[in-house]
Length: 505
Image (cartoon, rainbow, N blue to C red; front, side, top):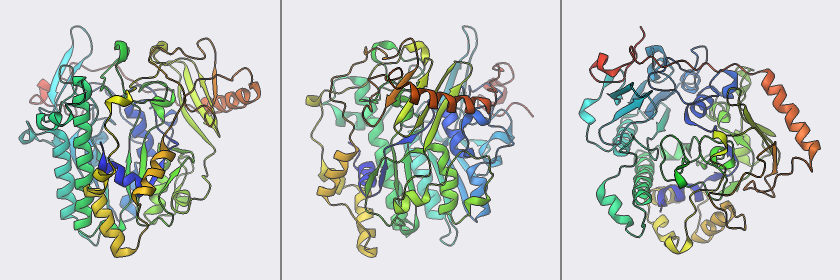
């Protein structure tokens, strides 16, 4: 159960057509730059810890724009946008402070990253930092709690006459290191004894801790009198990496994308259509489910406008579109298409225009084309609306509503929104479901076929041709990937007191 996240969703806007990238670094790059990753060479794999690569320094990040509007800018948690030189780290890219880790993952308690690059090259080091210094004093504390406490500290110490941009990139519910993929406090795990699979049970506990974090942050904003002028966004950077039949490479977390096809790393909906909620007392519409098209790159111009900036003054080469009017007034989206990705090295691509989605090539050699993470209804407790009503988030929003006469969702309204947001595909789909297009392009009408079951590429060649031409246009604008060989000698944490740190000066 996620009562705090649910309370936020049912009193805000559920953005049910939000797209991100198939993996983490490209998504975070798109968020921070407002550009498709193909336009700065970041469209490939995530940055490895010992890889001398980062988002090019020619790119301006979202917090740099918000600073110009008078905001203080704070980052918590995962960075994963490059750290081989200090100039690529958060304090040099627009953030006033950063508490978190620089690479892609750490273990939840010891905050160590072990990265194996070959049979003979494995590097290991501590990766938890406060600004430019290692935070050794945090070892042994659960990462989700650490980041929550930092958010509370920042909110409580924020001057009320100065606006703040708080970027909170939780480790949860990403997996940790091999051997410690999933970790949570035992007392939280014990709350989910009805889940027979021990991995799923631990995963549920990790989600519970994340949900608790959401409630704590929102209640802290309410207590400080900041909630009545806040915008809160909750979203993922990609789909879950599931594990059925051992087919998921990398770091599985036993999550679920069901009923969408595919997982993280893929161009299927399960890899790139992500959960997203936005809430604010500034909205003039009642809580709703929005099916209007959005991309993670849209947040830069959208938040710039929300913060009082003039989006027309932003660089013309941004791919992100200002969606503030759509969000606040429910006007039509200014976005008619989304380039999901072009990976010129893996020779795959995907694009959506209107209801139509075209996929070219295969993801992960077709090994993750099925439907993963289905849970038998008999194994799931009844949905508990009372838990939502009793949550910190609901109580905080209810108090705000009483004080300012904001729209507020009743239990009846929450049930209606839950029904509207639920995707149903009508058939029992499993992990061994084959790709509907193993030898050619895939075209789906997502309005009629949200789970990508029926390939209409050949019956609708007119649409296929239109989208293929659009992909060709984007391919002509592509900046080649800037992936680099790992630097296992110079990046070795042993050179820096067993910590991951910038190694090129």
